Amino acid sequence: VPGKDASTRCYWHYFAYLVYDRDLFEGGSIANLTASIIGNVFGFKAIKALRLEDMHIPVAYLKTFQGPATGIVVERERLDKFGRPLLGATTKPKLGLSGRNYGRVVYEALKGGLDFVKDD
Image (cartoon, rainbow, N blue to C red; front, side, top):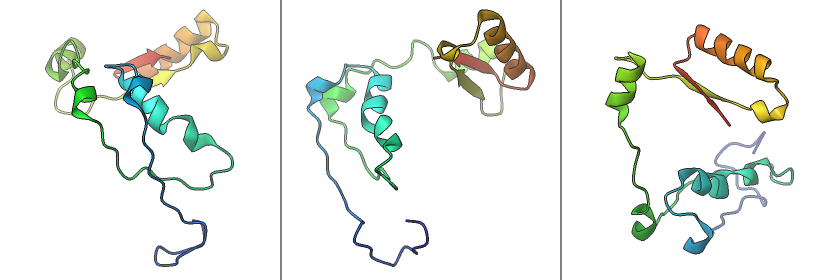
């Protein structure tokens, strides 16, 4: 909370424990899981501060994740990048970029040092 130190108790500090039914989530979809749990709720105007402190995922749901088709070693070999973190970005062409302008954004991102660019 702005202007308050951690030791100050404020009437607007609350803890919430939320439980979601597993049937609400698509099995094996990390995108669905993260969007549902930590997605749009952080953008609500009525919420001034919010922190996710812990999350428990049932073993049965974890087993629906098969993992990537290849591992980091294969990706590093494809990119010929070793000994450092890989750096990428996500672009949003659906927000109105033409194909030409989207291509320019990707070109500039890769030229500027990104290892990969993903469209959303």
